[in-house]
Image 1 (cartoon, rainbow, N blue to C red):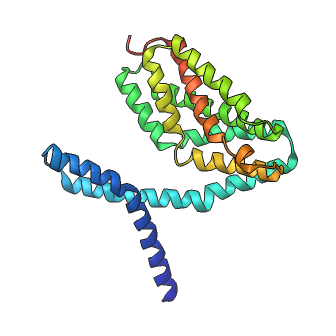
Image 2: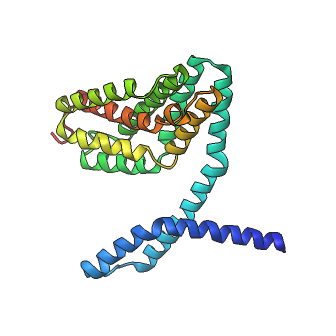
Image 3: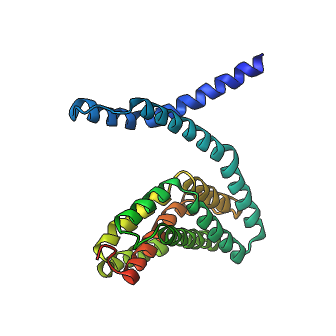
Length: 241
């Protein structure tokens, strides 16, 4: 009986955490819809069911990351670091970045919207694959930086400068899209895995300052898609033209 009560209490706690996560945005949307815009909700039953499923799905998803995916990433990072093989670690960074990106729900939503607005010129598959390649390259370069013991500045500043230069050559519509893609892909899947990879490598390799060497992979994971989407824009031209 006690075990059942403990399980129920844990479930309620998880649901409460999920509700607290989405409550602010739900409250803002309801206030604007009902108070400021003074528009009815319409199918409020469907909306209520959808919100409930959102909370439940968020709880299950985040808990799965916490107890499964993140520890697995940390263990793999530590084991790879013990091998001290730069090639193996770079390949792992490539694979992890690519796979994590394909699992990002926000990116899929953005890609579907982009395909719709461009009339299929920039399809979902092409966009997602481009972003995934960017994240993969970002994590690979970031992992190599940690292994080689180089601070982030010599990598980050040239990458930012390159992104700035590419914005002058890419169609204007791709500039905002590139930065939106970077934010969409650094979500609940990529971020925990990137943090686990970076901190795991830095700890296993005995880097002195974990804050200097163990973090920054998320930034690399965001910069990669920006560069790749801008290059894609230069190749394809204006999707609306």
